[in-house]
Length: 402
Ligand code: ADP
Image (tube, rainbow, N blue to C red; front, side):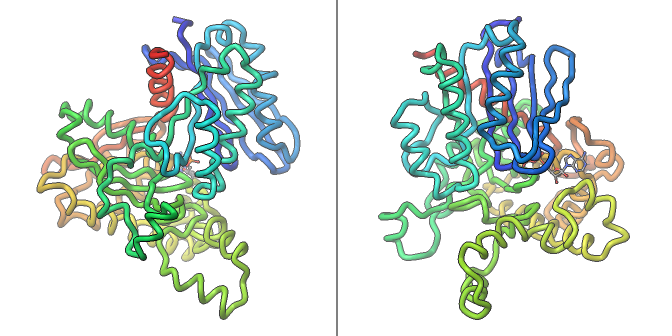
């Protein structure tokens, strides 16, 4: 039914995802993506009611220009869908220390998102650009914009997980702690797991791995996230496309003091030149890396380090499970599509009761979900994430209550 639709906007650092969907019947009427922002060929793809479009929209296009294109050239032209939008849901990466759940956007919420920007400098400012343009372009819905935060999912983590072992004053006074990221995706696949395994969410003990350009892993005990790999910012934890994940902080002192590299440059190295790209020296894109695994030594090394770190995290999270692990779940572009990663990682976890079925594993990709374990193993699931659907559901819940 073309009514009660939610427009979902996800402004990322190099791409913008958008969709219009009905959260009740889960139908997506429109979905689109702008890619290659600030690069030579910025393009947009969208699909509306069975018709697919792809257009080059210019060179070195900014988020603001791309958003204007989405609103003026895509949404306004799809009037049947557009006129049935009742609310707008925004993905916001970091809620800082003041917001712990989805919220109707007003000036106070905007100021909280601004305050949290130093903790997600690549994301929060862009999320705000999306919010401001949506308010301007949809004046009739200006009071029906909802922020759904990735950090909310981690709000109930215990202090033992979220505190760093640095002087307590840095937490008390400056709110330095582990906040987590990708919470919307972990939350979505955790709820899907409870449906698939037919177990109540509040008794679910699982480990969820979101492996995309950014990668993170969460331990969920009795339906509550009790630990996660991303920290104060999305730089900590697993090896990622271009981010280092965990390193000894002394490397930063060495780069600065002994090598004379500026702090800004170190920031760029750790966020944009490290991870799979840094080790392989070729690419951060798994489509390329997977193809060259057996022929290129640097590529092989980058993937082996990626899986080594991931398997160590899974093993360490098993000890948080209260003596029962219901499932390990893979999601995100890599988690959903790259059977090689799942195979290498899980083969290291045999002793922990995780046994992969090679055939099943090989067949699960391209949006399929399913179990990839043998019959004598703890369940291992692949579940395609759908952050847009969860954002739409949370948005509808909030605007229905005002
Ligand atoms: P983001 O974190 O930006 O949402 P995604 O979840 O889309 O990222 O994941 C991007 C990663 O997934 C990239 O490394 C990409 O190469 C990889 N990926 C996506 N689809 C495939 C595929 N079909 N085969 C191999 N790798 C894929």
